[in-house]
Length: 193
Image (cartoon, rainbow, N blue to C red; front, side, top):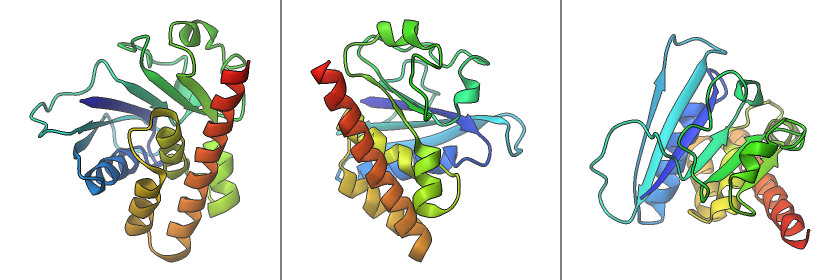
């Protein structure tokens, strides 16, 4: 089973991201589940959402304490809560930021992970460019596909287009494609370094 934990703030599409990730996995013939946990339901409040992907039915229902992948939609959460709890050395880390992970003070966290497992992607900027709005969730799913290989980019963009009609779906799909390309290039640079 592959477990994903997504941290963000209310209004950023954290819950929608987990739902779309599970639908993309389901579209590829896998079993998946998605569910959120949050306190007060208000814009800007911290939100955590979970997604599990497996080739067999998923019976477990509790929150994910040891994620195989951690997606951080809002880097302002990095030093406010213990986002990295339960992150093992073979886990993946994807952070929405235009800064480097080192600039964010994540050197120690990255050092605990295997090589090529941690990447920054400017998902908010890509969403602004392709969608006209600063909603990073769809772009991050493209980055997740490139980083982990758990789902294909085609499954992500099909799911996005199925969830959002017209220009919104196309803009989000383009943002996901751009994030996928960004992560692929980042991984190539890390490998060459």
